[in-house]
Structure formats: C-alpha cells, structure tokens
Image (tube, rainbow over all chains, first blue to last red):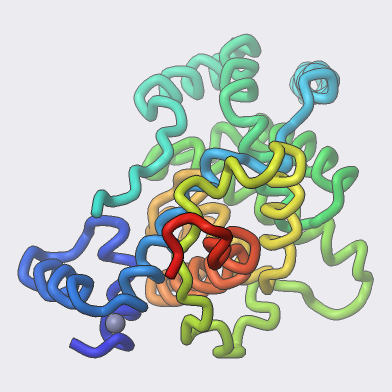
Length: 81
Length: 210
Ligand SMILES: [Zn+2]
C-alpha cells in the first residue's frame, strides 16, 4: 500500500468503518511507515482536542438571557395564531 | 489504535416525546429541547458566521423557527439534525446580509487541493494540552479553525465536533455524501497540519533526544 492510498482511507480508518481486510492492510502499513503513523496519530489527536476543548462556549449569563427571550417569543408567536 | 467515539447528543426517543408534547402546546417540553441543544447551536452559528452577535441572533431565530415549524418536523430525521439544518440556514443568511454582496454558500473556496499532502510529520508531545494554559489553548484552537475555508470548517464542526453522522451532515448542508467525506478528510488534515506547528515535540533539550 502506498501512503496516498493510506491517506485516502484515513477517515474510515479513524472512524472505525473499514472492513476488516482493508483495516489489516492499513495497520500493516502503519507498522513500517513512520510518516503515516505520525499523521494518523496526530489527526486522531486533532479531532479529540477539538471535542474536549469546545471553542465558542455559550456563557451562562448570556445563555439564560437567550433562553428567556426565546421562550417569550415562542409564547407570543403562539398567541398570534 | 482505537477509533474515535462519536459525541452523543441527547436521546432520540426522548427528543421525539418532547417534540410531541410541545406540538400539543407544552411549552415546557420545548424549553427542555432548547436547553438540550442551545450550546450546540451557538457553537455552530459562531463557526459559520465568525461573529458573536450574529451567533446570538441565529440561536434565537433558529429556535423560534423550529418552534413555529414543529408541525412540519417529519420524524424521519432526528430532531437535532433538523434543528441544525435550520440553524445552518439562518447562519448563512446572516453571513449573506453581512457581506451584502453576491451569494455566500458552503461551497466557498474549497476547490483548492493544498494541505492534502502532509508536510509536518513530527509527532506531538505526549499531552499537548499541558503545554498551554486553557485560555491559550482555546485561542490556538479558535484561530486555527478560523483559518480553514468555511466549507471545510463547517463539515468538520458538524461531523467531528457536534456529533452528526456523515449522512446527517450531508443532509444539514445540502451536500452529497462523497462531498462531505472529501471535505472532512481535508479539514482534518489541514487542521492537523496547522496544529502541529504548536504541538510538535520539541527537539533536544537534554532528555532522551539523539
Ligand atoms: Zn505511509
């Protein structure tokens, strides 16, 4: 397997959605190809770090303000019908 | 190597029961749905509009629209996916208004192929999260993802951060499944490339480096 083929299959490999024979081929590639090993490893970490450290968290005070505004708009939109 | 676990967002069956109750006039049920997903919608809106005030408006407009259109929700997709689709549309409308020029779409500048061939192939330090304080880390993560073309960024956010499946992401963005897959791969690889500049293992300094 070439590195380009490995990269093309990387998504499904990381998501665990490859069939077992292709998965075995990719794992074999990883045993000797340092570059793909690093790319695979750091891509996985990239996804994890964005999941574990959410950017744009909604601050609590703003959250309460928005919720109140939304519910009151919903109520008044209902009474108009 | 373990595979990535998908974020679990809410319980689909519970959501449907809440939708049903809300349709029958139980505003409290809708409030529960709002509390379950408002943070997700806010993040998605921020990623698309890149503007905090717009994102606040999108949260309000999207939930209000969802409430008004609740009767049209079919139940053949998840409530969350349906809500995200509404929010993405609202966010794109905001973006169009702000740019006040020609059409803005999710297809913006994604045709370039750069970033596909990995250049940074140094492994990261064992725990990059310990290299930076939380605020610095957030800043790096935010600036890095902002630098992606919007068509890549949105796919990455929906699929990898907010827990939609490939099919649901395609549905929410009006893209084909192959398009979602190819954008997701490029988004992941480009982010990895850019983050590597911050997180790669420092050479030497005594320890076991050779
Ligand atoms: Zn390789």
